[in-house]
Amino acid sequence: MLAPQCPEGFCFILSLSDPIYMPETNHLNHRLLVLQRILLHNFYRLLGSFNTRLQPLQHFSIKAGYHDADRAESFDDRQNMDEWQLSVYETALSVLKEINGKTIIDVGCGSAYKLMHLFGSDETTGVELKETCDWLDKKYPGKKWMPFEVAKKSQLKADLIICSDVIEHVKNPDELMDFLKGISCSCLVMSTPERDLVRGNRDFGPPENPSHYREWNETEFYHYVSKWFHVKTQIITKDKSVSQVVICFT
Image (cartoon, rainbow, N blue to C red; front, side, top):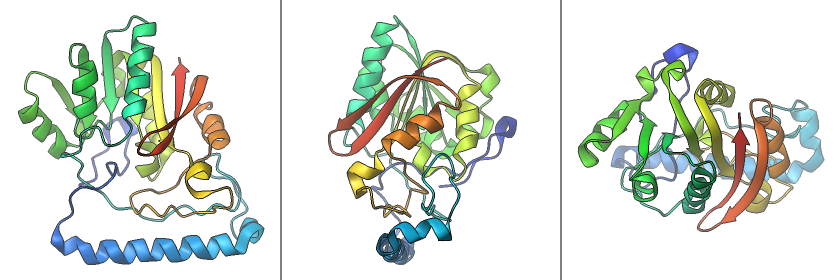
């Protein structure tokens, strides 16, 4: 997956969620990265509280001692349907009804299967990398798709923004948050894995998922998102994956 250009100062490398396709030439690199992650993860777990001496700072509101990944894989999830984060989109649908909204922007919509099947009768905009947008335009003609490469936050407006399990794939999440904050909207529904429920509270990173740069626990994510938005509600969803969902109002 290509890295987008930098629209309005917004530039991050996005890895779409949960791999379903990987070219044969990438298999060896993938296995090596997974092995590296597992070894580092287990090593830092053994170090325990000593990690705070190695990494004493809190980055992106994550506890001292936590080690981010320095690189992450990109994946193409265009064949995914509702295997992941279905509860997040169902929560977003309930919120949209609550606010009597009609317009939705899905930032990092991936295959857009859930967006189309739950919000297909509403006015939707899916924001993705250009390669995926080209594919979406053919699969769902007549719907609005916007490449990250040309996205201008100042020109975007919706009743509801969805950003489901995207932030953990972004090298600098502050840039993603600035982008979301710059969109005129009434409400944001945002999700990411809950680290402690997935890995336990003795996890010091890096994530074992090679497409993730970092993961937050519930408290950390609440404090992080609160720097940009007023968090009204935070819930945990447990379907195929364990996600934490924040419902925010501007």
